[in-house]
Amino acid sequence: MKNGIHPKYRPVVFKDMSIDYSFLTKSTVDTKETIVWEDGKEYPLVKLEISHKSHPFFTGKQKILDSAGMVEKFNRRYAKKTK
Image 1 (spheres, rainbow, N blue to C red):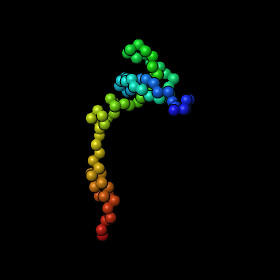
Image 2 (cartoon, rainbow, N blue to C red):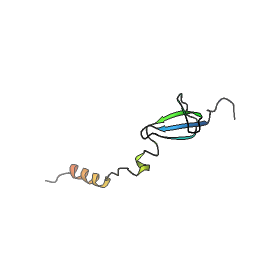
Image 3 (cartoon, helix red, strand yellow):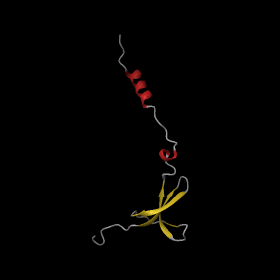
Image 4 (cartoon, rainbow, N blue to C red):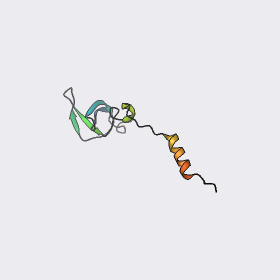
């Protein structure tokens, strides 16, 4: 590998701000904020709006649309009227 062209791959803390959940993983993301993790070490911090702990798909609170009913409603509304 060439030196100086690859981003730095290091441990980073990602924090879901909606439910105050954090996890430590490795990433190349660049951030200026830091946080002290449970092990006492300081790591870069990335704030998230949503994560796997708060996303509706993964929590089972996903809304399922009734597409068949919507199609029927559309067809009734815009069907050609016979005279």
